[in-house]
Amino acid sequence: MYQRIPMPEGPLFGVRIRQEITEREHRELVGLIQAHSRQYGPVRLLVVYEADSGFMGAESLYENLRFVKETSEKLVRMAVIGDHAWANTWVALFGLFGGIRANYFDRPQAEEALSWLQEQA
Image (cartoon, rainbow, N blue to C red):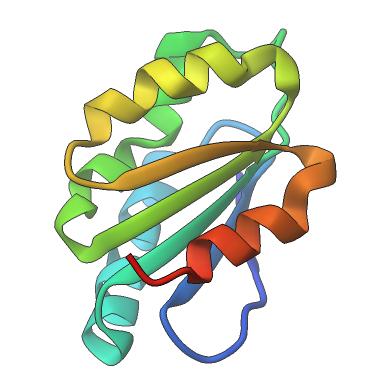
């Protein structure tokens, strides 16, 4: 289950993930990111991951983020906000998203995540 996060008009696209993403939601997210890219250019993606870390293993985590892999050519940056206990898992997964500058932030660092997303490369 995901929920869009309202963002200012422009290349920022935000999504909050609370439970496993269904196949229908996956296709929907891919379409939304592709449409956003057509309108604003390379997307700067914010992912707020709120799913219970005890509920989902690394394989489920990757499956929930498959939409990132499938839209990677449309993404220029990705900031993930999550639970500190998962920091190392996130860093390892970033390597699978090839070509996307990605960074992990703990929950209290939401403002830093948005600032980082908006930095010019």
